[in-house]
Image (tube, rainbow, N blue to C red; front, side, top):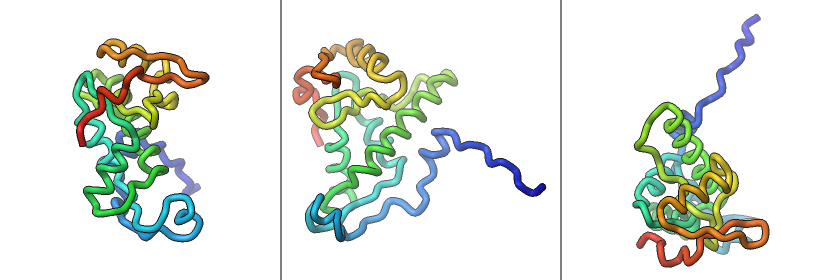
Length: 160
């Protein structure tokens, strides 16, 4: 009948769909215990992608640095840890989607690490693909327990 199945959005469409973001909200309730008093910016996905795009070859950035940049940009106390991580994942998948179509100028998502220099295993190709990309750019990756970290990653962090 009138029930057409909706086509699943591409990663690129998800990246470009800002809904009503960015927005800055007061930190309330349970989150105040976790994050402290103040305000939190919930960024637009494209903002996270734009920051990830700025990391040159040989350099690295962490999700926490991205959150700091977003907080500064929007005059908030912190950048939202949850949405920033999700949007970085969307940016990574959108980049891979473009790469699969032959686009060479993609967001270098493998240069965006978790806290402590940990490779994000949820990015396209998992740890193995990113380890290769990072090693190709001169970084050393070591296994630490179940995680993979870039050795001396602090030396390569971009200046904010």
